[in-house]
Length: 204
Image (cartoon, rainbow, N blue to C red; front, side):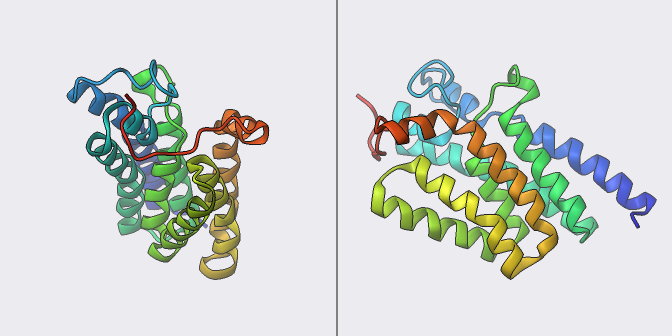
């Protein structure tokens, strides 16, 4: 049973997680560095990979760090108040929903991978570490950032079920489905052979 304190934690955590997730790191950092709006240039996705294309490694690294923090901070804070896995899962999903559909930026956000990684690291450092390991392994083989992220995120519910806590698996399955949907254009390009392999150089 969930008690009144946990209800308050749930409401505050979900609201705060969504609002924090709604702060678009890519857009703000591009403004700071006087780069093109990532919603209008490159892949038109406000995420670290597109910032890398538009501005190079340093702005992209800042974007990645901020996006990871948006997922980690709400989960870490709510874990100080409760160990209820369903409340923690709800806050994780709320932070990612904010990144995907930010209230401050006309509900047009990124694809959620970095924010998901932050939430996973806060949920369980070992689970986040597995995500990174899978991503690096797939990327080393194919050089497709999108495919690496998709394989890593789809594997998370299975790792959680087997090695963390089965109660987190449903939320991570929902997370995987949402991120797959957000990457449907990438999936189409992967299938047709039109997806661009990643480079760590600024676009000319």
